[in-house]
Length: 240
Image 1 (cartoon, rainbow, N blue to C red):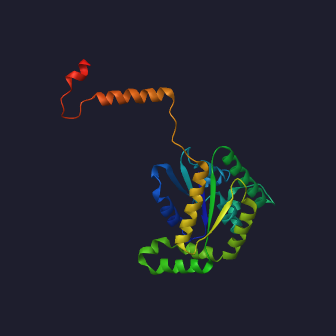
Image 2: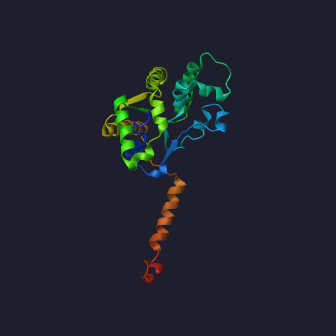
Image 3: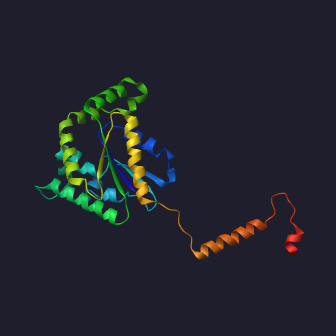
């Protein structure tokens, strides 16, 4: 399963991951956080780095930010496109929506369950959380001046979100928009969506074949025949 988690800064992505996945064995969960692409990644097609970090069979992969950055941040800051050395394209966003939809269809056709969550934070609540990060010394590390710079593009991001939902909420990979002004509610709602997805998948323990079952029985007989630590072997058992 791939959980795609998108939101503006301070919407609670990290906290949602920490609380919602706290009851899951960490060996089966991989969290991938996508930052600004490297020079090497800029020289590749924009979906490649996401493809390379998909979870394996039987794992839950969480994308903390995702391939949707390519139609959000890049759309709000179109100057980023100049660094990707792309051919001239007058319909770049239309083509990216189509490519993303087809990639997610490819994933679902190959057994991936794609769950897309958007934590919808209000502008006033974001302001309040930014101020809290500044005022509380133990939260200063969470704050970056870049957050305030991006906040200046609030309206542009809202438009980009609207276009994203319109063009990429599909039958095989729908978007779930979760109100995020109350952290407890966002976490409960996110957990409900993920739990429902797991119910639909209905994961089962692997079934053993006949050879494996015979091997288990042989191992059981051998272990049961051993004397407990500190106990003398039963001579009558050997004679029998």
